[in-house]
Amino acid sequence: MIARMASSEIAGVPGPSAEDVQRVASLARLDLSERAATALAHDLAAILGHVNRLTELDVAGVEPMTSPIEPGNRWADGETPGPTLPAETVSALAPAAEGPFIAVAKVLGDGPGA
Image (cartoon, rainbow, N blue to C red; front, side, top):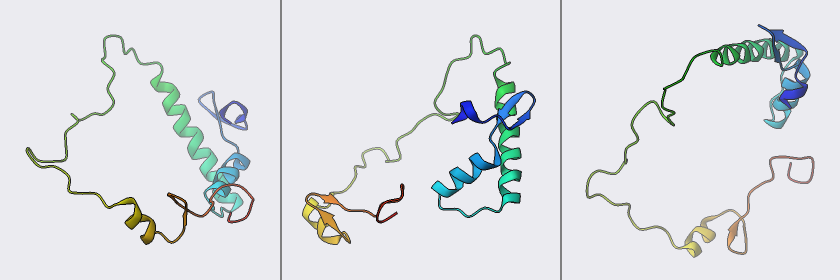
């Protein structure tokens, strides 16, 4: 999708069009006005422009990291998680089940349940 987002540009970086924003909004089941979609397309283009500027930084010798903070275990020393529920109990508590799986409503696409 990024390859075709070229209707608005900030700092030479192609940004999403209002139509692109409307498409993503529809996937999220959001109803945006044309004015809001245009404003969001402009904002997203500005964000992409900023990210593009970050590519100009010299990061030689900088160690990659997955988080700016040290990872830690949320459990205290010696503490362990409690017992889990049996699959049968979880299945019985679910609103709908299909075999060993919990059935959920479809959220993407145009078919039934969408």
